Image 1 (cartoon, one colour):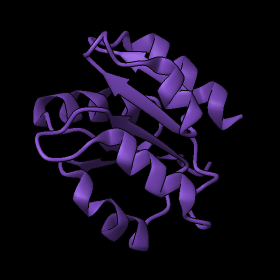
Image 2 (cartoon, rainbow, N blue to C red):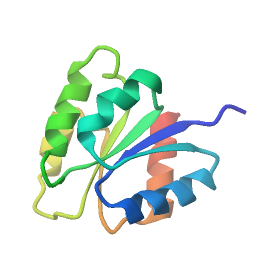
Image 3 (cartoon, rainbow, N blue to C red):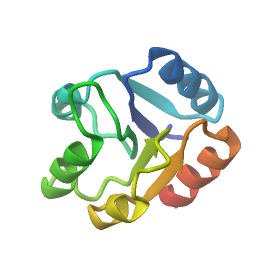
Length: 121
């Protein structure tokens, strides 16, 4: 069985490690990225099956990264799930820019696994 690749982009290393543990236990290969500026360098070497992308970064905006991903012909079909702890984030904006789903932190791991699995079917 081929393991599905999950790219998780978040500036919280502890959160990345937790996601890695949970999804690895579900048979995923997890690629962790702390800085969204490096996303296209990672994508040159590995194309994930799905991306979990945080909205808020100290220097970047996840919506800008989402827009760049969805505007690039090679990456536009990769499902992207936006994540945020900011309840003021407009979910409509995420969907309007091409997000496939949006989840709020703190996450419910079982729920996120179900959502990711659904998007990969």
